[in-house]
Length: 521
Image 1 (tube, rainbow, N blue to C red):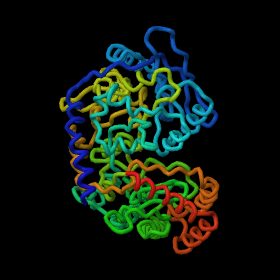
Image 2: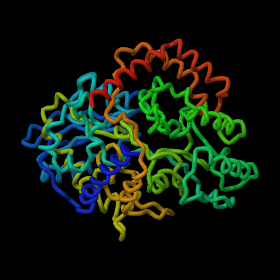
Image 3: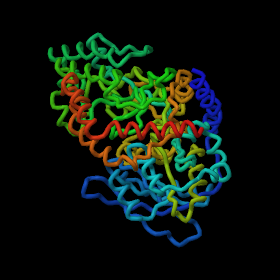
Image 4: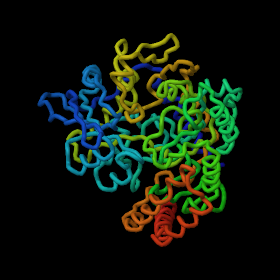
């Protein structure tokens, strides 16, 4: 608990700085770089990209920013960038040019040496550790305190630790929900109608959802007209959101990590194969039971994308995410937490931006990132578009997006910069707290963290083993994660084949590196 409290104190100390920036409207940082207008295209794989122009040759440099693929390039992207560049030229001496890529596209772009200055990166998009170790990202350790002091001071030391590779900071974490929290999501209208409203104000476990699933299934079978699907819990082949949220995952392909339940015990620094932990297998047993009871869609294993209409869902979020999810689904979501808050290297790296080691404008890019993360006016436009065109502000300070905003400008907001700095969005049917980030950070009083913060597993020595174990995972995991396969029959077979593929060698290598990391602290 001493370590947990120390982390919380560090996060709490910085909250005053973060919230001061939020409440201060526009706080101008030092200059940054680049600009231009957006052009767009579509890849053959269905992702979206843009072709970036060369620098316009003027006195103001243009920073090319690779952002994640929002599905469709915002039609009003160029119009929004024009307004953003008016501010960035004035406040930072640079312009910005957005280029959208899906995960495959951005990795190919980096490999091909396409021009860029800033890129979104995380654990699951443009893999931060992998790309950093490959040498694509600039070392900004010494530049942050001198060229972006406001940004440097706005985040606690433990968060910057999560951005380190080999002791050096190679990316800028997005100021957001640093600690992972997983929630059950309820269709409010449906559950209110069947007389079983979501247990708001409480905390559930993963397994506490079962009676709600049973009640929902009975109502669906009885023909309840408010049911949004034929089963209460609708999922795709990837499984349920947050299923492994009770583990600090060291490597997703090999499925190795440290269960948070081990923190404070003699095993808190022991890396394991997660299929050998009851924290995971108990959940798999429940999923299979729910699948057999008809609570889960029977085609979950073959469904590529989960439908947005459901009675119950699960996902990683935070206090206030009910409003965001409500806006995304078009019906009122109510949420109850069942996991976390857990702080890990992965949660810190959940959204980051890195700078090209070969950029002509590394110092400018660092200063520009301070603008993005410290100037609320700029951040709101970057996230929501132009005030009065794409959105308006309510009397309580919330953002009310209009049809022009919903249809014309919807990038990935979590990928851009400080989530806690941008104004909170209103949602119909949900009471939104404009001060939600105070509550989120106060909730970190109960934070749990392993000792892995800042640790990155270098897979170089076990690449072939990981590829072999991944093949086993591809064979069994989706069936387990959707409840389709019986854990009693499948897990022993999975473990046996993983052992033949080299899982023990992977765990041994990861443990050796982690032990060395701990010894070097």
